[in-house]
Image (cartoon, rainbow, N blue to C red; front, side, top):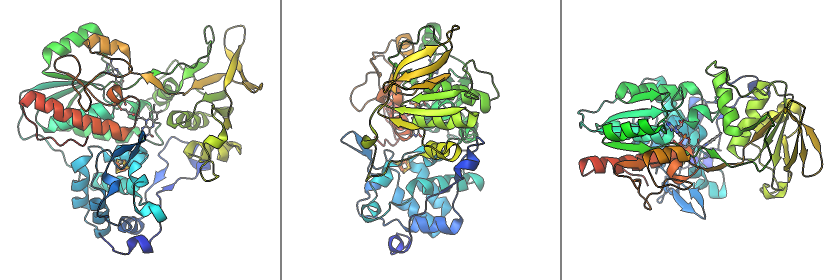
Length: 465
Ligand SMILES: Cc1cc2nc3c(=O)[nH]c(=O)nc-3n(C[C@H](O)[C@H](O)[C@H](O)COP(=O)(O)OP(=O)(O)OC[C@H]3O[C@@H](n4cnc5c(N)ncnc54)[C@H](O)[C@@H]3O)c2cc1C
Ligand code: SF4
């Protein structure tokens, strides 16, 4: 415990955000780091509890409490206060392959379990984590680590989201030759094509992929492993295959969209926006610029669509939320996230309308969407309707190509990662269902340990789940 009275002396200070009215005009990251002195104080707020629930990572009534990676949180909080960055970094990297991802987008279930939060405000665990890894990259303390020797075993990882990257990183450091096969043009999964740049900068993803490449992992992009011939070749040429293809099938909107243009799923729209604004490409899905945009749903994807549509210069942005407002209020307050703050700053109003759904679509003679009719009888102008109502499961084509038993997710034994097919494993959203980056990394680490045991007859890789 760095400072015994730290939790009494210092108040919680979150990382600052750029002002909504400024940041909504660009795609740059909106979190700003705290000055060093303030960060040190935030590390000093940790009470180093005898039983640190923050690192427990337990499921309770379907919700996660504590860190699923069992990050050694009090240890690195202590190192932040002590100013011992190298030791803090080594403790952080012991359990988390990619703190630069979780330090930005993790909803921080650790903070919900923080004892300091019972009578006051939890320690800023996520911000502290991000600070350690970003300072380490900035000071070149993150070094290339190549395995001392190679095992001679070859592993193909299908999908380069956080789960696939974690599998690849772990197995590469164990000395196996890892090739990551990715369908898209750039690696990163939803870190690249889902979560927008202002929350998850693409150069941060690239920095990690470049480091992993330097350490020995091969990335092959633009290859669809659901193609049966490709799947057969991978099964023949590799000692193990790990499917990390995410949970991509969107939940249907329940609307008759036949013959209507202008209706898309949230992930399609967000991917197109990344292609347009980060990679300079020209996707078929239109920009929100000049259009009246209606977004159906709540949660991360819907918020990211609101923030993206605002940045693209939408004429108007409305978010329809099925459940009533009272369902969302906490202690009388309606929580707002970054996208709602931005909408308020730009338009002067919260974009959400609660307790409302889309009843009908109105199109012109060419089939282009012009308006929607809501269940409360309103007609809203709308040329771009985006459905962000969750995911129905993983795609069937890739499961069929590898012959693995699957329903909404790929079937494995409880707590295991081996599929119904010899030498084929799975991890991440594809096994767990739509989840979080931190769980994808935890799944990837645990799957890597199981694959290593399968290849070598034993493993010394640590499992955090
Ligand atoms: C818009 C959005 C915002 C989110 N925001 C957050 C957030 O703020 N915080 C958080 O913790 N979580 C967030 N999530 C959830 C999080 O992104 C996922 O839980 C996580 O990315 C899952 O990781 P994964 O590796 O299992 O799958 P994914 O990240 O989905 O990666 C799967 C990869 O497999 C590739 N692939 C699929 N099929 C094939 C094939 N046939 N051949 C080759 N490659 C293939 C895909 O192209 C993709 O790159 C968000 C999700 C979305 C959709
Ligand atoms: S990965 Fe998430 S849960 Fe774990 S310490 Fe970091 S912010 Fe907390």
